[in-house]
Length: 91
Image 1 (cartoon, rainbow, N blue to C red):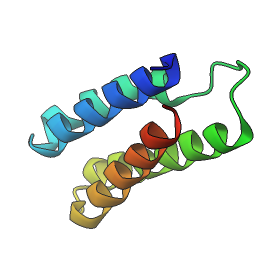
Image 2 (cartoon, one colour):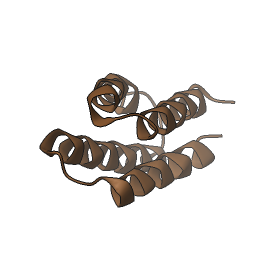
Image 3 (cartoon, rainbow, N blue to C red):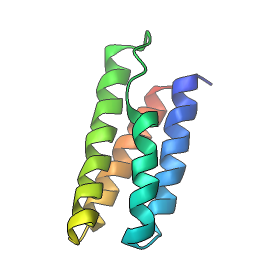
Image 4 (cartoon, rainbow, N blue to C red):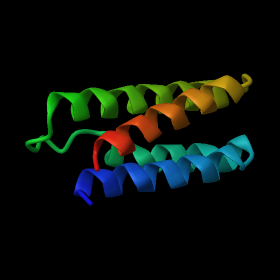
């Protein structure tokens, strides 16, 4: 498996952990994912970069909703789905 797949798997695991937590505990988990989701500027394909960017944006939307005290239910689903697509493509 690729390093990219490992990063996506780690993000996915942390997302699921954060989803099960209350907002005050979830926000630091999400903030900790930013370095993993950002591009390292390597030789990844455009597809990988786009999938990673989609996951990053979806995770940011969850974080914004939690920070504002808004419901994040559907946003969690989008973030997890986007991360699973990134992981699947990165094999």
